Amino acid sequence: MLENKLGITSSVELAKEEERISKKKALELFESGTLDRLESGKTASLVAIHKALFEDIYDFAGKIRTVNIAKGNFRFAPLMYLEAALQNIDKMPQSDFDEIIEKYVEMNIAHPFREGNGRATRIWLDCILKKEISLVVDWSQVDKEDYLLAMERSPIKDIEIKHILRNALTDKINDREVFMKGIDHSYYYEDYKTFKTEELC
Image (cartoon, rainbow, N blue to C red):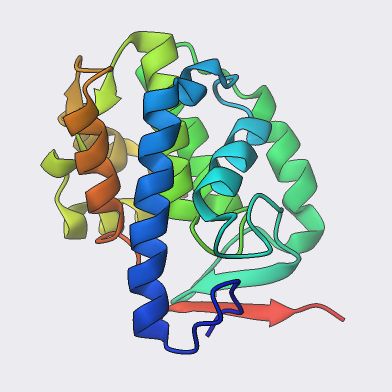
C-alpha cells in the first residue's frame, strides 16, 4: 500500500482515485497544449508528465525513484545505474519509428518512478512519435496480453513490440478521443499487485 496525499488506506480505493485524478490531469495536459511544448524524448519531459499526473496523489510524483523495483522475475535498472541509464536514453536517436521504439524500450527498462511508469511513459512515447514522424499509437488497437508479453521480451528482442505498435499507428495526432482512449487503456496494462520495491538504507 503506497503512502498517498489522499489519506486512503484501501488499495482498491486508491487505484480508483488514482485513475480518476490522473485521467483528469492527462486531459488537462492534452487540451492545454503542454505536451506539445515539452522537448520530445528527454527524461525531463517524462518527469514533467509524471509530476502533472500524480502530484495530487503522491509525494514522489515527478521524482526519480530511490528504491530498486522489480515486476515478476524482471528487475528494472538498479538504482546505482539509473542516472547513467537515463542520461544515455536522452542521447539516443529518435529520427524514425524503429529508433523511437528502441528508446521507449530502454525507458521501460529504466522505470524511473516508483509508480505510474507505464502511463507516463506511453504519453511520453506518443509525444516523440507525434513530433518526429507525425503519428501516434491508437492504444485501443493494442491487445493487452500481446503488449505485455512483447514488452517482457523487448530487452532481448524488440521486433515483436515494434510490430504490435507499428500496426496500431494513426495519423490522428491531435484527436482528443484517440488520446483519451490511450489513457483509458493505460489502466489495463498495469497490475498494481505485482511490483516489488526494496528500500535502500
